[in-house]
Length: 265
Image (cartoon, rainbow, N blue to C red; front, side, top):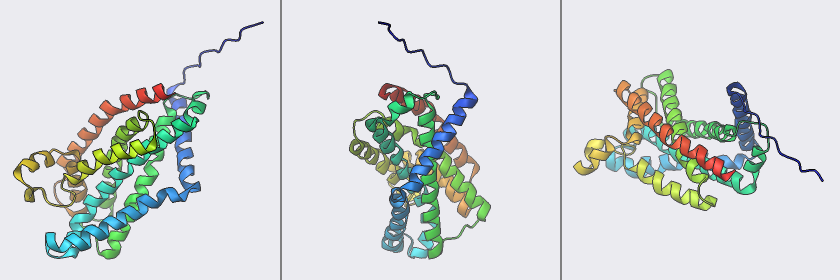
């Protein structure tokens, strides 16, 4: 009787790993195309938020919902996209529980390629969320004050930060046992993070003790950058702080996500 040995997998070069990540990114985009019901939350939620906050609170906050709409849309765009990042944690958790991650492990691909593919593939959901929100806001009367190119730049800033932030739900999704727990933890973290900011109200209207956090909150920095690009105002400083927050999140949580992924496999 002979004993077969399993050879160690060959190391994958950087270019090949990038190609593998691109292929798995396309896989995740195809999943959305073949199951469009996955987009219900990122399309309906922004519209519902605009209706609730603009029409119910716009008059109380700004005296006129139309004036408040200009202030609201950039903030809600950031909020809805950050909420959408929780989807990657649920998707990775489901893949791990179904054994799909183990199948990837058996393939001659970079071990981190499925994780990178999931992150960049989820970007399509973020873009659709932004289009839905800005499109509906435009129907109600929202306009880019600095022109279309600046508005697109604001969307790119939001998208870049969301891709950095999704390292957190990815870590959670690969650590806990079931998707329900991922959603619960994600909501507990994301809701106060987005609400305790200047998404809905101006920072100076908040209690002094709360302003201390809101002024340094990463969400506030992204919103400031987005509003500056869309409506006019300071841009360079909030974009810089947004980039620093994004890099910091990636430095801390990307290795944790990769480690959690390796442990699940």
